[in-house]
Image (cartoon, rainbow, N blue to C red):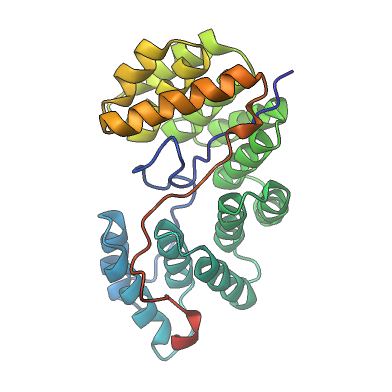
Length: 278
């Protein structure tokens, strides 16, 4: 039985450098755009990867007079996580949970932080809290699957991915995570077949393609792993990835596939502290 730790589908990882986060995108039934017109501007800045601007905009909203804006706290936490400011993101989600103790998004964000910190047990607790509030929260189920894969429980992980897919059948990320989990469990052929199908989809993301490259690498097909990897990554990054996968394969125990966030910090001389916000 392989003991594996899945690559994190939440943020950039050693084998998926350059790919954006897919675990948590705040979705609120009634966005506070009317009360907070700058919220949409902040969300657009984060979506295009302008993290300093997004963080600035979210903080401005948080400083406004009046009731606290839940989407601004969630967006700020995720933007900080995007920027690899993990401790600041953790503080932001803690503040969000203090203000909004029944917020599934805040618990999912905290779970994302714990995944980044390679603390899958704590991540599961956070995702479970989100599921207590909303048992049909696909994002929490997906995050729970990632945490279980990190613990080597591929059967449990796949059950969670399948439950997430039932709730959100068109979500490519969940399907990609399920297929990668199959590869981690040793079912390389089916995993590659599913990932190839997803990679040809108009909705395919760089992460889907790099998951396919990883599946090929785990199956020992370095030629295809290299070919697929080059679609999104530099030759040097692909070379490093192939060498790393091969080294791990030779050990017979894949516990070396530990998620890492290699995102370049926003600014080495500046910390995005919670203290300057309301």
